[in-house]
Structures are given as C-alpha cells and as structure tokens.
Image 1 (cartoon, helix red, strand yellow):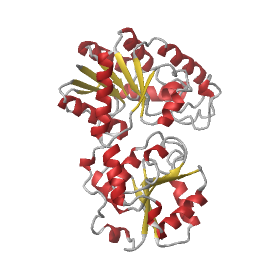
Image 2: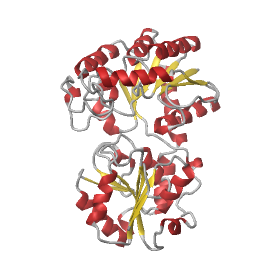
Image 3: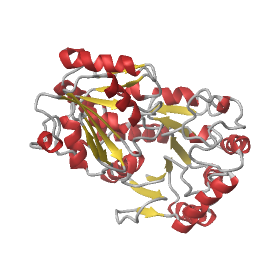
Length: 404
C-alpha cells in the first residue's frame, strides 16, 4: 500500500514530529510511505521531499498581507507537488496542515477529489472550516458564514482587505467534491467544532497525538545541578510553562506571571521558556526558546506542575511531554487541553480565573495528593500518549478503509 503524507513541516514542530513518526512506522510495517512538506530545510530521509520554493512561500505570505487572500498562491510549488503525487499514484493521501503559505490548497484538494484518492485529513487547528483562522477563539461566524472578521490582524494576517467570506464559501465548494474523505482530529473538543461546521457530514475519527518517549533523556529524575544552575532552593516548588512565542496572547505566558504576583510565597519558583531573552527576577525565571530535547526534558523533570496558559489549544504536545516526565497539568478549561490530563492528572479552571489557579498551587504545595504523583503521571502517558499507540490507530483506520 502506498501512503503519501502532506504537511507544513517534517521533524520540526508538533505536526512535523507526528508526520515523521507515522512515516517511519509505515516503513517498518512494509508500506510504501512518502512525505511531502513545504517549510524548513531539505531532508535526506527515505522518500521525504520538500516540494515548495522558498521564494514563492515569501511571495505568498506577502500577498496574503497585502490582499487578504491566503492559500491562493504558491502556483509552481503546488504544481510540483501534484506532479509528484501523480507519479506515485498513492492508495492513501494523509493531509495534516495546509496553511502557512506553502501550497494552493484549493488546487491540491480539487486534484485529490478528482482522482478519487482515499483522503484522510487531520485537523490540528480550525483553518479548514473557517474563513482564514487557525483558532477562531470566541468568534462563531464560521458556523454559518464568515465575513467582517474580528480576527483579521491575527495569523494569517491581512493588513487591508477582508476576504474571509469569499474564502469560507470557497472552502465549502471545494469540500463538496469529496466522496471518500475522513476527517481526523486529535481531540473530541475539536471534533465537536467540526460537527458544527459545514464539514459535519464527513466520516470522522478522533486519534490522540503521541510522542516519542525514547528521545527524552530524563523522565521524572531531576538533572543533577540544574537547581543550582537556576538558583532554585532544594525544597522550593517549581511551576513550568513553555512554548514558542510564549508571551503572545495565543500562548499566555503572561498569565503565569500574574499568577506568581498573586502568590507571595517565595518558595514557589516559576520557569517560563520560550522568550527572546533571559531574565531571573526573584522567583520568576524567564529563559530563551530552545528546541534541545535534553534541555526541555530537564525542565519538565524538575517541575512539580506544568501550566498551559493559552486560551485555547487543540491537543497540546507540551502537555503530553510534561505528563511523560511525571508532571501534572494545570490550566484553563477551554479547548482540548483538559482532555490531555483528566483528573487526577490535571486541574483546570475557567479562563482568566488566575486567582483560583494561584490558590490551587498554594494548596498543592502543601498537599501533593490533590493530583497524581510523578510515577502515576508517567505511567498514564506511557499508556495513552506514545507514538506507537498513535500510529497503531492511524494504521487501523487505513486498514479499515481498505476493507470497505
């Protein structure tokens, strides 16, 4: 069986890592597996190809800002991708993400529908059923018809024109061409959103994301000397948050600073990873972003709690990684974050209710039985969130479709 995967990235970012895991496991299972991706450096892995032209990606991003249309450019990159797919003639096309200026998704999807390929489309965000937004937040226009977008300046940003109504209607027309597509989401929350959109009648499947535990050198053992390096006392509690662009509204790093200001306890330290600078101010430690797995593993293992401060996430990989180091989750009861850590592996509160979170942290410092311990969190993650479990679910879905 021939399987083609398409995504923005390969190996990099949460979706790029998922693509790599599925690809390698498909090869191990004897499938003919191919990956086509649009952004980043060229890769030399077997059957992995970067198809987009960098200059065209930059042009696409520029035109999106100036005109307001996104996903309508990258003509040559898309033609190149389609030629490669035609040559392979796959049994299955697995799509992950089609935003980020690297492909003309309309031309690609029309081609796939016309060729009658069996298509599995994993939504890692909301882009495909909104006018343009990856995260619609509190806006519900996508349930009927987008337009007069309140998030026009959010990614993918338009500086002048609002084409969200046109793009939303365009997507509706494209998806009408499909009669053999299954929509996959990593969370029940996101699938619930799909079921409220114009895509409600497609076949649906929820498959939780997984991570490669073998790549983390520390599990719940602290790295020797890390506390001294960060000037954290031996008996102090540690709350961690991390993510790219951590101080943007989308990631919510500022929420942890507000929580810290509500707690006067100087024996609780807060580590924030993902800024463009480093700063140590009493018990708040701000560190630059890093993709080094050994470094990230050390921070996860050191921490007593992992905080996710974004208003909405789909199924955040950072939560899976934290649990895999024995660290329970705290955050907001919005989006799919709560699904990653059901009680007793996490505690969640109404968005913006930082006073309640601060109070919980204070109580948790005195009573660790409020949440699962390190070993229990690790065992839960090993049972639910391995790449083996994730890939097995994808393979089972492919085989079920093959037998229909």
